[in-house]
Image 1 (cartoon, helix red, strand yellow):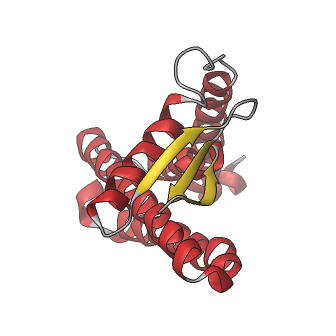
Image 2 (cartoon, one colour):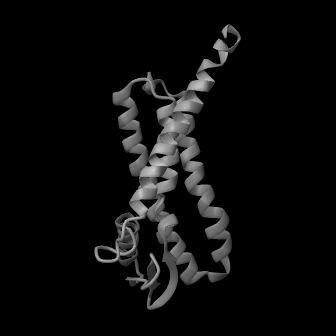
Image 3 (cartoon, one colour):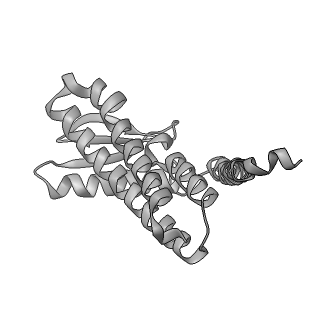
Length: 177
């Protein structure tokens, strides 16, 4: 058993990360399996992200409108009366946030600083995600030929790259101790 002692931090990281990720993913799964058709279809977080994206687009020179998609848990985004995309559950960044929180908690030491970092990181991820959706709507409207590369490559790099930078900051930062 003494031979495994040097690996204790790795075992602890994997156990905490895996446990938190599993717990938060299960909670999110149960959240998604509620029937939101009568309240706010699709789920409230996805609807809020779509609404805030619409509001930001309307602050620019674009006229944006959103409509719930009947029979499908999504919100359709229109820019200047042209349909540009559907906002689905995967667009709300909740899965990315769950991954972020799990990793930070796996390296947690001082709980107050950890909670503050998690809150700050979640707010930043949320804001970057909404800005990502705004930019994607503009690209899909103005430059549809760049739709695929922006949606499939550029914006995942932006959101995941930011999360990785936050993780690196958290690991290297003296604020966690």
